[in-house]
Image (cartoon, rainbow, N blue to C red):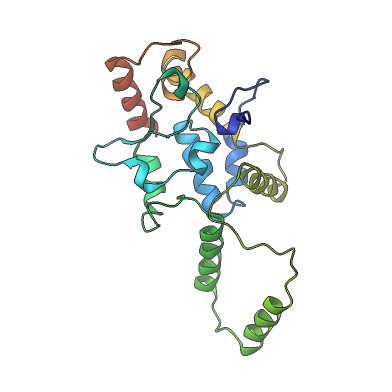
Length: 229
């Protein structure tokens, strides 16, 4: 069986350093539409990259003021533990921009992101599209090489990292990768509240190897999401 990567919820083999929030903010403006939202939601929730990449509307419980997402596959599932990711008001506002997408398909999609980019370009256009521009677009489509790939419906671990890397290059900042966002959240949660709460929010089993979270844990986690998520 293939070992899971850290992005997919597998064991981390070396210490991951948090990325500075200021660095993320400098990069965000250069990210594709959907990747920008993925990064923002990760920062607000501490979710693993793989959990955000596979997120679907149908998996989000929206009945309470704190939305909850319980991934089917996660790092501590073999301990019979339930993984809960909480979406507070800030994360909810980001997710609502994607409410019209297929609830059973990945919420964040390269194809959908590219479509949103073209729509924004059309909306920003101040002059009508010229016939010569339409002709050039058609010719380009006909002469496209086999290497040209149609954007897929799901961001892979590689494509997510590459999108962030490209944005870092365009922003002329030090490169960082999506898994660092989880550690940035952990650092913030620890400084804002406590290491214990950070463990609850991040589903770390080291502090509570086989114990279920208590009612107090859940309440504190929801309160944190309500204030900061």
